[in-house]
Image (cartoon, rainbow, N blue to C red; front, side, top):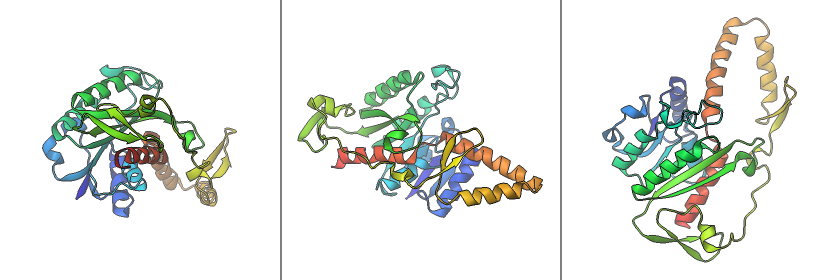
Length: 287
């Protein structure tokens, strides 16, 4: 069974195809149309559907969390610009407010598991209220939590709110809270199960730095230190030396690639943050 990736940016779409070919994300097809042009019939036969797919980090994070490629799931990190403090703040009037198109496909196809992410500042609360109301109106249980990438060891803040929707016909279901006895959570909400129980249980510490433990730190021209993957510094130095020898075509290619990569990275979710969120959801649902 194949995965479906919807991504309107041509550079990111080709990036997805490269990742699929290399086996880094679930095998599937890439659709470059706007989500507004996608119909429910277009999604028939796909096990996983990733909207606003970017560079495929949701698929990668699902794998890292132990979610199998043949296990159904939808993901979608809607554009943040309409609600970001860094944007114009046009909110629901912004043409990039594409939740209604995503909601329509969810309503028609009714996937069991849906993961998403959004900025955790600006006007995002109004967006979350709408998404929660819409999903609960369709019979989904909805959970959301904002947290920083630094909280899972990243060397930067990058606060984002991760949310999940779960289709459950039961009125109540048991959830284990940090190893305590089961707490029954009303259908429609499981984001605050600890509050419903009256305590937070035994909190489990995360490993310090984790994924970023072995990063090399480079001192940049602006006076800041930035982490890079261990062992890449010699490659960067050699590439910079080559560019200094007047290879204009190489510089032009590097410039175009740099712009595309920066856009892809900037729009992407943090894979480790998403992995931790998915793992917490899987523990709550499957034990």
